[in-house]
Each structure stands twice: as C-alpha cells, then as structure tokens.
Length: 309
Image: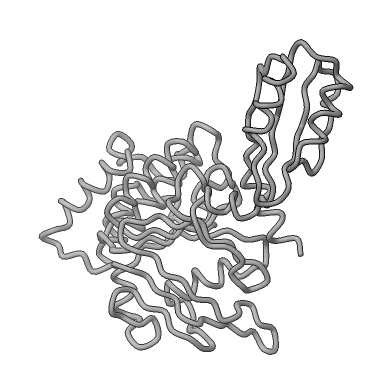
C-alpha cells in the first residue's frame, strides 16, 4: 500500500518545521529518510502515523487520509519510535498478545499472528523471557514485532538500529529487508552505510525541505560533478608523468599522492572523462599503466554537501 505525502507543511507557532514537501513510497519499497537533527524527519514520520495533523497538505496511506480517517490509517501502519517504549516487566509473548488485542487482532486469529510474528522476528526461543532480561538487540526485535503484530501494510521505523552492536545491526537490517519485500517501509537512521545497505531509495531532508531523492548511486553521481581517478604508472619519471597528465585536454588538476611511487590523483573537468586519454598517453610514452580506478563519492560526502549549507 503506497504512502503519499503531498505539500506537507508543519508549523509550531511561527516556526516552520517542515516546508511543503511531497514524496511517494510504493509497496515493496524501503525508503531511507535522512537528515540532520532538527531537519524535520521525525515530524514527518509522526504526521504519517497520525500523531498530529499537518498544518497544510495531505498525507495518505493507500486511499485513506491521516486527517480524515486517522483510525483506519492506524490499523494500516506499524510504528517503531526511536525510544522503543516497551513494558519491561512483561514476558515477550504476553506483551505481543496485549499489543495485538489493542490493535484489533481477532481472538481466533491471535495465536497464528503470534506464531508468525515471533518466527519472523527470531523470538521463538525467547518468547517466555521478560523483556527486561533481553539484550538491546532483542529488545529492538520485540519493538519490530509489536509494529508487525497486526500485519500492517506499512512500517515506519525511526532509528531501528540505534545503540546496537555491529552483529545486531546486521540481524535487524536483514530482518527489515525481508519485511520490506512485502510492505511499504520508511526507515530513518543516522548510520549512512546502514541506509545504503538496507534501502532501495534515499530521501534527504534539510531545514524542512527535501534536498535529494534517489538511489544511493544516483545521489553520488549527482553530487560528483567531476571524475576523480587514482592512477599508478611504472617505467616513467614522476615529474615527467605529472607534467604529461596535467597537459591532458580534460585535466582539471593532478596531485602526486604522498609516500608513493608514481601514484597520482587526477580530477577531470566537469562532465568529462579522461580514462581513454590516460591510457593512450601511457601507450605513446611506453609507460606501464598498473592502476586506473575511479574514486566513488561516499554517501557521507553527499549528505554533508547537501545538509551543511
């Protein structure tokens, strides 16, 4: 079931937390929702979950409006907030049964939903443990389980891997990817490598406005206006090679990499490539080209470029 945000604005008094943003998330898609603190991420996610109404604009889950049909929307959404509030003194299975009844799961379907959710979230062997006995990773699993127990069409996950160790992060990431094949998922995280590994698409918000929307590859490509090459050449004099590279027609800059033998960082002019020119140069000079690799812009660099202005 698609989630669509159209011209959404949220005001707090005279402060505009979110400024007229629009985007759509399709069924089976995992959207990574990124932004610095105070950018409007959590505000947007809370509006989608009917926590409060937009100041203007419209948000729909399928054909249902968060403002006109909030009770129906709540049945369609599973929400894991960042602080993951759980009843610590309850056993996992008792807590999930309680949440399921609150979510309107019918009693004749309750056992089946409990079994399925415990299995999907890897909690079958822990189901009789009290929540306060669990590690942080397993508590996050319980948080996901409570979001899934009523089999919602869409999942809203705010920092689902916050505070987890690397092994736990991998486990939760794999779980989200499995779930995301059948549901619509919006995931907020500050761990950019995590978002890149988990999400089909990334949306970046800054100062209440969307500043980027696309795959990780798309965003890196858009942010990098020039080609950067790492070049390694044998059989030539460093200064002679440097001069020849600098004189190539599309060379913007060339740097000798320190503490290395005949290794260079080569920047092409915007919207050009120099790989063929470098190869032909080496052939004409009788040099051996032992390394020619493109330097890919990191997602962290893209994020910094888009959110520090």
